Image (cartoon, rainbow, N blue to C red; front, side):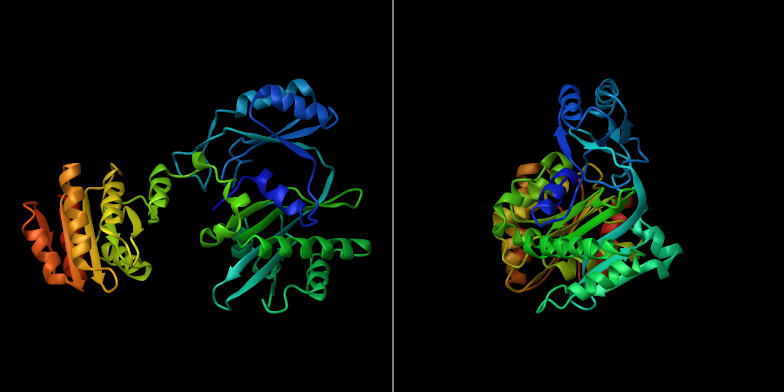
Length: 387
Protein backbone atom coordinates (compact mmCIF):
# COMPACT_ATOMS: atom_id res chain seq x y z
CA UNK A 1 0.00 0.00 0.00
CA UNK A 2 1.23 3.49 -0.86
CA UNK A 3 0.56 6.77 0.94
CA UNK A 4 0.92 10.41 -0.03
CA UNK A 5 4.03 12.45 0.71
CA UNK A 6 2.39 14.46 3.50
CA UNK A 7 1.14 11.25 5.14
CA UNK A 8 4.61 9.68 4.98
CA UNK A 9 6.06 12.79 6.60
CA UNK A 10 3.50 12.67 9.39
CA UNK A 11 4.48 9.05 10.10
CA UNK A 12 8.22 9.77 9.97
CA UNK A 13 7.91 12.78 12.26
CA UNK A 14 6.61 10.48 15.03
CA UNK A 15 9.96 8.71 14.96
CA UNK A 16 12.10 11.84 15.15
CA UNK A 17 12.68 12.36 11.42
CA UNK A 18 12.79 16.12 10.81
CA UNK A 19 10.51 17.44 8.07
CA UNK A 20 9.58 20.94 6.83
CA UNK A 21 6.47 22.59 8.23
CA UNK A 22 3.49 22.04 5.97
CA UNK A 23 -0.26 21.54 5.67
CA UNK A 24 -2.51 19.61 3.30
CA UNK A 25 -5.02 21.60 1.23
CA UNK A 26 -7.98 20.49 -0.88
CA UNK A 27 -9.05 23.89 -2.25
CA UNK A 28 -7.25 27.07 -3.40
CA UNK A 29 -8.66 28.88 -0.37
CA UNK A 30 -7.24 26.26 1.99
CA UNK A 31 -3.89 26.58 0.20
CA UNK A 32 -3.89 30.34 0.82
CA UNK A 33 -4.76 29.83 4.47
CA UNK A 34 -1.97 27.28 4.89
CA UNK A 35 0.55 29.63 3.26
CA UNK A 36 -0.54 32.40 5.61
CA UNK A 37 -0.10 30.19 8.68
CA UNK A 38 3.37 29.26 7.44
CA UNK A 39 4.39 32.90 7.59
CA UNK A 40 3.09 34.33 4.32
CA UNK A 41 6.50 34.18 2.62
CA UNK A 42 7.88 31.65 0.17
CA UNK A 43 6.07 28.33 0.13
CA UNK A 44 6.12 25.28 -2.13
CA UNK A 45 2.83 24.08 -3.66
CA UNK A 46 3.16 20.32 -4.19
CA UNK A 47 0.68 18.03 -5.94
CA UNK A 48 -0.09 14.89 -3.95
CA UNK A 49 -0.31 11.78 -6.13
CA UNK A 50 1.16 8.29 -5.76
CA UNK A 51 3.90 8.81 -8.34
CA UNK A 52 7.34 10.30 -8.70
CA UNK A 53 8.39 12.90 -11.26
CA UNK A 54 5.79 15.42 -10.12
CA UNK A 55 8.13 18.38 -10.48
CA UNK A 56 8.96 17.65 -14.11
CA UNK A 57 5.24 17.29 -14.85
CA UNK A 58 4.41 20.71 -13.40
CA UNK A 59 3.08 19.49 -10.08
CA UNK A 60 5.57 21.30 -7.81
CA UNK A 61 5.68 25.11 -7.88
CA UNK A 62 7.20 27.86 -5.72
CA UNK A 63 4.93 30.68 -4.53
CA UNK A 64 6.33 33.90 -3.08
CA UNK A 65 3.08 35.46 -1.91
CA UNK A 66 -0.35 34.45 -0.65
CA UNK A 67 -1.98 35.43 -3.95
CA UNK A 68 0.51 33.35 -5.90
CA UNK A 69 -0.01 30.36 -3.60
CA UNK A 70 -3.75 30.50 -4.22
CA UNK A 71 -3.25 30.99 -7.96
CA UNK A 72 -0.89 28.02 -8.28
CA UNK A 73 -3.19 25.83 -6.19
CA UNK A 74 -6.05 26.69 -8.55
CA UNK A 75 -3.91 25.70 -11.53
CA UNK A 76 -2.68 22.39 -10.10
CA UNK A 77 -5.84 21.08 -8.40
CA UNK A 78 -7.86 19.03 -10.88
CA UNK A 79 -4.94 18.83 -13.29
CA UNK A 80 -3.96 15.44 -14.72
CA UNK A 81 -0.26 14.89 -14.13
CA UNK A 82 1.53 12.51 -16.49
CA UNK A 83 4.88 11.26 -15.21
CA UNK A 84 7.16 8.30 -15.95
CA UNK A 85 5.41 6.43 -13.10
CA UNK A 86 1.75 7.23 -13.84
CA UNK A 87 1.61 5.87 -17.38
CA UNK A 88 0.05 7.83 -20.25
CA UNK A 89 -3.33 8.08 -18.49
CA UNK A 90 -1.81 10.19 -15.69
CA UNK A 91 -3.29 10.96 -12.26
CA UNK A 92 -5.75 13.68 -11.27
CA UNK A 93 -4.54 15.96 -8.48
CA UNK A 94 -7.11 16.12 -5.67
CA UNK A 95 -4.98 17.44 -2.82
CA UNK A 96 -1.89 19.58 -2.25
CA UNK A 97 0.87 19.91 0.31
CA UNK A 98 1.69 23.53 1.11
CA UNK A 99 5.15 23.57 2.63
CA UNK A 100 7.58 26.18 3.90
CA UNK A 101 10.33 27.20 1.50
CA UNK A 102 13.88 26.24 2.49
CA UNK A 103 17.27 27.66 1.58
CA UNK A 104 18.88 24.40 0.40
CA UNK A 105 22.66 23.99 0.28
CA UNK A 106 22.91 20.27 -0.61
CA UNK A 107 20.56 17.54 -1.85
CA UNK A 108 21.29 13.96 -0.76
CA UNK A 109 19.47 10.63 -1.06
CA UNK A 110 18.34 8.08 1.55
CA UNK A 111 16.43 4.88 0.97
CA UNK A 112 15.41 1.72 2.83
CA UNK A 113 14.21 -1.43 1.08
CA UNK A 114 14.18 -5.17 1.70
CA UNK A 115 17.08 -6.80 -0.15
CA UNK A 116 15.74 -10.10 -1.48
CA UNK A 117 19.20 -11.53 -2.01
CA UNK A 118 20.27 -11.27 1.62
CA UNK A 119 16.81 -11.29 3.18
CA UNK A 120 17.72 -8.15 5.11
CA UNK A 121 16.79 -4.47 5.10
CA UNK A 122 19.24 -2.48 3.00
CA UNK A 123 20.01 1.16 3.76
CA UNK A 124 21.11 3.14 0.71
CA UNK A 125 22.57 6.63 0.65
CA UNK A 126 23.99 8.85 -2.05
CA UNK A 127 25.42 12.33 -2.43
CA UNK A 128 23.43 12.54 -5.69
CA UNK A 129 20.03 13.51 -4.31
CA UNK A 130 17.16 15.12 -6.16
CA UNK A 131 17.26 12.70 -9.11
CA UNK A 132 15.95 9.16 -9.60
CA UNK A 133 18.17 6.61 -7.86
CA UNK A 134 17.95 4.47 -11.00
CA UNK A 135 19.78 7.21 -12.91
CA UNK A 136 22.49 7.35 -10.24
CA UNK A 137 22.84 3.56 -10.33
CA UNK A 138 23.23 3.62 -14.12
CA UNK A 139 25.62 6.58 -14.37
CA UNK A 140 27.40 6.83 -10.98
CA UNK A 141 27.13 3.41 -9.36
CA UNK A 142 30.12 4.16 -7.12
CA UNK A 143 28.16 6.98 -5.47
CA UNK A 144 25.60 4.62 -3.92
CA UNK A 145 26.51 3.59 -0.37
CA UNK A 146 24.89 0.52 1.20
CA UNK A 147 24.54 -0.82 4.72
CA UNK A 148 22.75 -4.12 5.34
CA UNK A 149 20.86 -4.46 8.61
CA UNK A 150 20.78 -7.64 10.69
CA UNK A 151 17.14 -7.87 11.82
CA UNK A 152 18.25 -9.53 15.06
CA UNK A 153 20.22 -6.48 16.23
CA UNK A 154 18.75 -3.67 14.14
CA UNK A 155 20.38 -0.67 12.53
CA UNK A 156 23.36 0.41 14.63
CA UNK A 157 24.64 3.91 15.41
CA UNK A 158 28.06 3.13 13.93
CA UNK A 159 26.37 2.22 10.63
CA UNK A 160 24.47 5.50 10.65
CA UNK A 161 27.67 7.48 11.27
CA UNK A 162 29.45 5.53 8.51
CA UNK A 163 26.76 6.58 6.03
CA UNK A 164 26.88 10.18 7.28
CA UNK A 165 30.65 10.35 6.72
CA UNK A 166 30.17 8.72 3.32
CA UNK A 167 27.78 11.53 2.37
CA UNK A 168 30.47 14.09 3.11
CA UNK A 169 28.88 15.42 6.29
CA UNK A 170 31.10 16.61 9.12
CA UNK A 171 31.14 18.13 12.58
CA UNK A 172 27.81 18.29 14.40
CA UNK A 173 25.99 17.25 11.24
CA UNK A 174 27.32 13.69 11.57
CA UNK A 175 25.47 13.14 14.85
CA UNK A 176 22.37 14.93 13.54
CA UNK A 177 22.39 12.74 10.42
CA UNK A 178 22.91 9.60 12.52
CA UNK A 179 19.88 10.53 14.63
CA UNK A 180 17.89 11.14 11.42
CA UNK A 181 18.89 7.77 9.91
CA UNK A 182 18.16 5.86 13.10
CA UNK A 183 14.71 7.45 13.24
CA UNK A 184 14.08 6.53 9.63
CA UNK A 185 14.96 2.90 10.30
CA UNK A 186 12.74 2.78 13.41
CA UNK A 187 9.83 4.06 11.31
CA UNK A 188 10.55 1.52 8.57
CA UNK A 189 10.66 -1.39 11.01
CA UNK A 190 7.78 -0.35 13.26
CA UNK A 191 5.32 0.20 10.41
CA UNK A 192 6.19 -2.93 8.41
CA UNK A 193 7.20 -0.74 5.48
CA UNK A 194 8.54 -2.22 2.25
CA UNK A 195 10.03 1.11 1.15
CA UNK A 196 11.08 4.32 2.87
CA UNK A 197 12.71 6.87 0.60
CA UNK A 198 13.87 10.43 1.27
CA UNK A 199 14.75 12.14 -2.00
CA UNK A 200 16.00 14.70 -1.48
CA UNK A 201 17.39 14.59 2.04
CA UNK A 202 18.56 18.20 2.29
CA UNK A 203 21.13 20.23 4.17
CA UNK A 204 20.03 23.86 4.52
CA UNK A 205 22.43 26.80 4.50
CA UNK A 206 21.95 27.20 8.24
CA UNK A 207 22.99 23.57 8.77
CA UNK A 208 19.64 21.83 9.33
CA UNK A 209 18.91 18.33 7.97
CA UNK A 210 15.36 17.66 6.71
CA UNK A 211 13.32 15.28 4.58
CA UNK A 212 12.30 17.55 1.71
CA UNK A 213 10.36 14.69 0.12
CA UNK A 214 9.21 11.34 1.52
CA UNK A 215 7.83 8.16 0.07
CA UNK A 216 6.64 5.12 2.02
CA UNK A 217 5.12 1.84 0.88
CA UNK A 218 3.74 -0.77 3.28
CA UNK A 219 3.42 -4.55 3.22
CA UNK A 220 -0.25 -5.28 2.57
CA UNK A 221 0.02 -8.54 4.53
CA UNK A 222 0.94 -6.61 7.68
CA UNK A 223 -1.75 -3.93 7.54
CA UNK A 224 -3.92 -5.82 10.02
CA UNK A 225 -1.36 -4.71 12.61
CA UNK A 226 -1.62 -1.06 11.56
CA UNK A 227 -5.26 0.03 11.27
CA UNK A 228 -4.16 3.68 11.48
CA UNK A 229 -2.00 3.28 8.36
CA UNK A 230 -4.69 1.29 6.56
CA UNK A 231 -7.02 4.27 7.02
CA UNK A 232 -4.61 6.39 4.95
CA UNK A 233 -5.34 4.38 1.79
CA UNK A 234 -6.47 6.62 -1.08
CA UNK A 235 -8.61 4.57 -3.45
CA UNK A 236 -8.64 7.41 -6.01
CA UNK A 237 -4.93 6.72 -6.58
CA UNK A 238 -5.42 3.03 -7.36
CA UNK A 239 -6.67 1.19 -10.43
CA UNK A 240 -10.43 0.53 -9.91
CA UNK A 241 -10.05 -3.12 -10.94
CA UNK A 242 -7.21 -3.62 -8.44
CA UNK A 243 -9.38 -2.05 -5.72
CA UNK A 244 -12.25 -4.37 -6.60
CA UNK A 245 -9.93 -7.40 -6.55
CA UNK A 246 -8.64 -6.52 -3.09
CA UNK A 247 -12.20 -6.64 -1.75
CA UNK A 248 -12.33 -10.32 -2.67
CA UNK A 249 -8.78 -11.09 -1.43
CA UNK A 250 -7.51 -11.58 -4.99
CA UNK A 251 -3.98 -10.65 -6.02
CA UNK A 252 -4.55 -8.67 -9.22
CA UNK A 253 -2.28 -6.25 -11.08
CA UNK A 254 -3.37 -4.66 -14.32
CA UNK A 255 -0.88 -4.69 -17.23
CA UNK A 256 -0.93 -3.35 -20.78
CA UNK A 257 -1.44 -6.54 -22.82
CA UNK A 258 -4.50 -8.21 -24.35
CA UNK A 259 -4.42 -11.76 -22.89
CA UNK A 260 -6.22 -12.05 -19.57
CA UNK A 261 -4.78 -14.56 -17.08
CA UNK A 262 -6.32 -16.40 -14.15
CA UNK A 263 -3.86 -18.63 -12.30
CA UNK A 264 -3.47 -20.18 -8.85
CA UNK A 265 -0.12 -19.47 -7.25
CA UNK A 266 2.20 -16.52 -7.78
CA UNK A 267 4.99 -18.64 -9.27
CA UNK A 268 2.70 -20.27 -11.80
CA UNK A 269 1.19 -16.86 -12.60
CA UNK A 270 4.64 -15.43 -13.38
CA UNK A 271 5.47 -18.48 -15.52
CA UNK A 272 2.18 -18.11 -17.35
CA UNK A 273 2.90 -14.48 -18.20
CA UNK A 274 6.37 -15.46 -19.39
CA UNK A 275 5.12 -18.21 -21.68
CA UNK A 276 2.46 -15.90 -23.14
CA UNK A 277 5.26 -13.48 -24.01
CA UNK A 278 7.30 -16.36 -25.45
CA UNK A 279 4.34 -17.33 -27.66
CA UNK A 280 4.23 -13.80 -29.06
CA UNK A 281 1.46 -12.34 -26.90
CA UNK A 282 1.22 -9.82 -24.07
CA UNK A 283 -0.44 -10.54 -20.71
CA UNK A 284 -3.16 -8.08 -19.68
CA UNK A 285 -2.86 -8.81 -15.99
CA UNK A 286 -1.40 -10.77 -13.13
CA UNK A 287 -4.15 -12.60 -11.23
CA UNK A 288 -3.39 -15.13 -8.54
CA UNK A 289 -6.60 -16.53 -7.07
CA UNK A 290 -4.54 -18.35 -4.42
CA UNK A 291 -4.54 -21.92 -3.23
CA UNK A 292 -7.71 -21.73 -1.16
CA UNK A 293 -10.08 -19.71 -3.35
CA UNK A 294 -13.75 -20.65 -3.46
CA UNK A 295 -16.18 -20.63 -6.37
CA UNK A 296 -17.33 -17.09 -5.59
CA UNK A 297 -13.76 -15.73 -5.66
CA UNK A 298 -13.07 -17.43 -8.98
CA UNK A 299 -16.25 -15.91 -10.39
CA UNK A 300 -15.27 -12.41 -9.24
CA UNK A 301 -11.75 -12.90 -10.60
CA UNK A 302 -13.17 -13.77 -13.99
CA UNK A 303 -15.46 -10.72 -13.86
CA UNK A 304 -12.49 -8.46 -13.10
CA UNK A 305 -10.45 -9.83 -16.00
CA UNK A 306 -13.33 -9.29 -18.43
CA UNK A 307 -13.94 -5.77 -17.14
CA UNK A 308 -10.71 -4.72 -18.86
CA UNK A 309 -11.69 -3.65 -22.40
CA UNK A 310 -8.20 -4.48 -23.66
CA UNK A 311 -8.65 -8.22 -23.00
CA UNK A 312 -9.18 -10.09 -26.30
CA UNK A 313 -8.80 -13.63 -24.92
CA UNK A 314 -8.49 -15.29 -21.52
CA UNK A 315 -6.20 -18.07 -20.32
CA UNK A 316 -7.21 -20.00 -17.21
CA UNK A 317 -4.21 -21.99 -16.01
CA UNK A 318 -4.84 -24.03 -12.87
CA UNK A 319 -2.71 -26.68 -11.21
CA UNK A 320 -5.01 -28.20 -8.64
CA UNK A 321 -3.47 -28.98 -5.28
CA UNK A 322 -5.32 -27.39 -2.40
CA UNK A 323 -7.26 -25.51 -5.11
CA UNK A 324 -9.52 -28.11 -6.74
CA UNK A 325 -10.09 -28.06 -10.49
CA UNK A 326 -13.84 -28.60 -10.13
CA UNK A 327 -14.12 -25.47 -7.96
CA UNK A 328 -12.36 -23.42 -10.62
CA UNK A 329 -14.50 -24.89 -13.41
CA UNK A 330 -17.74 -24.15 -11.52
CA UNK A 331 -16.69 -20.57 -10.86
CA UNK A 332 -15.68 -20.00 -14.48
CA UNK A 333 -18.94 -21.44 -15.81
CA UNK A 334 -21.02 -19.36 -13.37
CA UNK A 335 -19.18 -16.18 -14.38
CA UNK A 336 -19.37 -16.99 -18.09
CA UNK A 337 -23.13 -17.48 -17.94
CA UNK A 338 -23.80 -14.34 -15.90
CA UNK A 339 -21.50 -12.09 -17.94
CA UNK A 340 -22.24 -13.26 -21.45
CA UNK A 341 -18.62 -13.73 -22.53
CA UNK A 342 -17.70 -12.30 -25.92
CA UNK A 343 -14.00 -13.28 -25.95
CA UNK A 344 -12.48 -16.76 -26.38
CA UNK A 345 -11.42 -18.62 -23.24
CA UNK A 346 -8.65 -21.21 -23.11
CA UNK A 347 -8.57 -23.53 -20.09
CA UNK A 348 -5.70 -25.69 -18.89
CA UNK A 349 -6.47 -27.80 -15.83
CA UNK A 350 -4.17 -30.24 -14.06
CA UNK A 351 -4.22 -31.87 -10.64
CA UNK A 352 -6.90 -32.50 -8.04
CA UNK A 353 -10.33 -33.40 -9.52
CA UNK A 354 -9.16 -32.52 -13.05
CA UNK A 355 -11.56 -35.03 -14.67
CA UNK A 356 -14.53 -33.56 -12.79
CA UNK A 357 -13.42 -30.04 -13.72
CA UNK A 358 -13.16 -30.92 -17.41
CA UNK A 359 -16.59 -32.58 -17.27
CA UNK A 360 -18.12 -29.41 -15.77
CA UNK A 361 -16.62 -27.35 -18.60
CA UNK A 362 -17.66 -29.75 -21.37
CA UNK A 363 -21.23 -30.00 -20.08
CA UNK A 364 -21.62 -26.25 -19.53
CA UNK A 365 -22.72 -25.51 -23.08
CA UNK A 366 -20.03 -22.81 -23.27
CA UNK A 367 -17.44 -22.69 -26.02
CA UNK A 368 -14.25 -23.17 -23.99
CA UNK A 369 -10.99 -24.20 -25.67
CA UNK A 370 -9.28 -26.94 -23.67
CA UNK A 371 -5.47 -27.05 -23.76
CA UNK A 372 -2.99 -29.80 -22.91
CA UNK A 373 -0.02 -28.30 -21.14
CA UNK A 374 1.17 -24.71 -20.73
CA UNK A 375 2.86 -24.42 -24.14
CA UNK A 376 -0.28 -25.54 -25.93
CA UNK A 377 -2.41 -23.20 -23.81
CA UNK A 378 -0.20 -20.18 -24.49
CA UNK A 379 -0.06 -20.79 -28.24
CA UNK A 380 -3.82 -21.22 -28.46
CA UNK A 381 -4.73 -18.14 -26.40
CA UNK A 382 -2.26 -15.89 -28.25
CA UNK A 383 -3.62 -17.04 -31.62
CA UNK A 384 -7.20 -16.43 -30.48
CA UNK A 385 -6.34 -12.99 -29.10
CA UNK A 386 -4.76 -11.99 -32.43
CA UNK A 387 -7.75 -13.24 -34.42
